[in-house]
Length: 412
Image 1 (cartoon, helix red, strand yellow):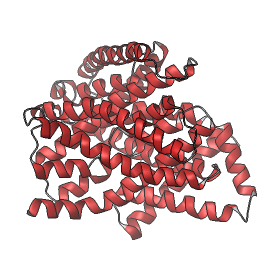
Image 2 (image 1 turned 90 degrees about the vertical axis):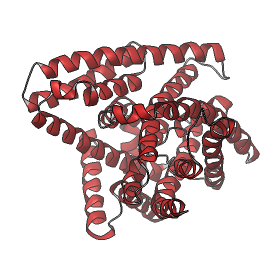
Image 3 (image 1 turned 180 degrees about the vertical axis):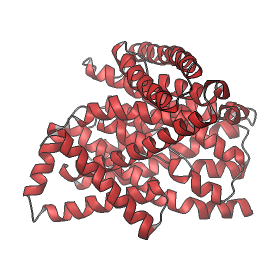
């Protein structure tokens, strides 16, 4: 089946699920879509025992369509640019120290903590997951995604600091997490079987430093082009072209396209925006990227649902996923509490705010995109199922209860 038919299936299912959610279920968009995608997967898995033909066809589509490369080379650049473009730098700047501690120190700590815990728990269950893969899992599951809960937190009237901190943390830890992930996967593709810190440090500096510089260059050139034209169709196309071309070039010269997109998005959304774009252009560019981000998240969840259907399940994988949820809670708690307890000058967050920031550390589409991009292997299947379980719990359970918990905490 051609890839075009695969896209038709994904778009059609996304539209149908979105309609069902908005018409009947009325959950926040991301939560509702993920819930229906998961429900679809469960039904498909149940029917799999009785009707094998459709699932053989789905397996063929998944195998023949290079999902790994499409997710890493297409989805990530768009998602990171869209998220950063809609972020207010001037709000972030007020809480930049707290955000930096959580985004940089938090991801590094969480990656190592989760990797060590995951390594011992998986081996305790009799699953031979190499430590390098455990580090890769720690890197892909550590970045947070507040999209699913931001509207809920706004309804609960949480302080601005919590909202801005969660958004800023997610924005920067996405970039940091992807850099760590790519550096580790490059070590894996080079034939490494164990963690080599000097090699990793060199790759990290190359990816991070190059990505930041390249993002600044791209952002300035794009700003100039936007400033010298006043035609919103052209300006939308320019942003689209710069994301696609910039991410492609980053991959060719082995620097972080993720960080480049974050920096470029921040510049487009904040750097002398009133000079670069008219109010009409600004509105159209913002709405285009907002809609594209929603569509890509929808496609990502459906992509996961189809891949999920063709996997061979093992009860140990489900147990490992359940225990990993506990590991992530402990990691998130320590990420926020350790710098806060150590010194309030490092992380200036009151107790109530710290509790909400801990609960607001959801995992989402980025973790799913990264785990899908791994090369095919039995270990990838384990990590994919574990990641899906963690993200499902995060979005469906944490996402649906955080509003009620936030109101209780803020009343105290």
